[in-house]
Length: 194
Image (cartoon, rainbow, N blue to C red):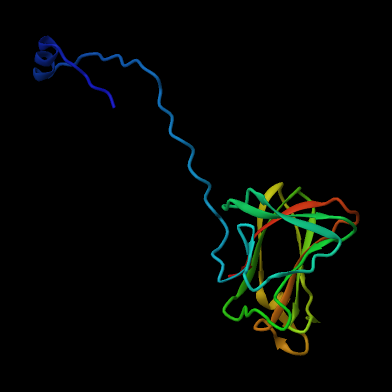
């Protein structure tokens, strides 16, 4: 905010319909950057968000991979960092044995992945009892470096060819690297049903 002090002569000039020239000096004020805006859809059923697993998904059956919580999620303070230790490693959180999570209210599944452009990842699930779902699954290929949101119809990954919709009995879920060697590092955030 600036305060302008006018002389009597300046005030009379302005009152008579004239104009005066003002020169304002001082330091420019910059606005702080806007906070990041999450572009991910709102999750109805959370598997992992902000580096935190759904409280019922207490098990970790990751394979050929290690995982840890790190700073810098997609619109969140944290995410899960996955480092593959062999070919096709995957991050696979799970419900407690004998329990399952229902995705019946969801129509789609969504996940945010941070990885290099061109890397591919798959998403698949298992039913209660550690039973495979006879479904085609889905493979995502990163189109850009950094965060990218992938959304898939629930039916594509939770409809069994024999049993039909099994989305009410999901026991495990995996995001698997499709890289044929270890050492792939990627982040997972905002994973769940929408």
